[in-house]
Length: 217
Image (cartoon, rainbow, N blue to C red; front, top):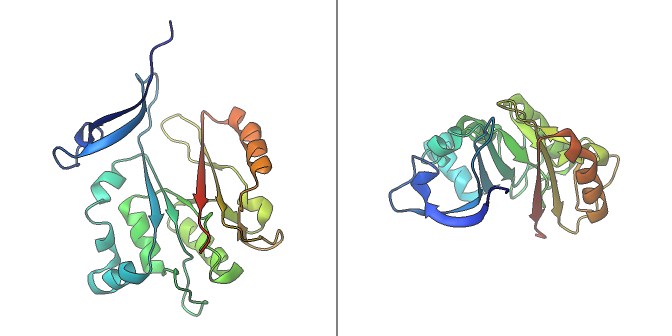
């Protein structure tokens, strides 16, 4: 008989993450007995390095933004988030949701390892902003997914292999913004292409994770 799997349950957060406050509840998805190698992953939502976060970084240092969460993030083998905005270098085109290199350095220091760039603000500083962001993420030894030097590159499979487990990542976003195929861009959701990518890449990894973002601002 196959082992019964619990699809989701409410648990004490400390049972999942030792650093969590006492009595804090958490939602645990798909718990089953581990077999073989295991990998610990944490996932966050949008990271914004602008506005109040930027002001905090300027006054207290950008590491202060993640200070209370760093023990949790860095406890994982893989830590994922959506970087909601470009990283703009000095002399680049500033935009409302842009961050700076100090901010992305703090993201890496907090322990994040995989960042989705497929969202409605990553192109706010134009194609050069996407290139700068791709380079900054790579410089800080993180992986980016969902954006690339052209449209085919934005749909590439990104591998984050660890502890003997092959983990693949895809990321796309529904924004209503048309992408130019031969310039730096993100993967605007095309359901048929996403299904094709899943069918193409799933046999080549142990686990395939797909990030879907939606935003129209």
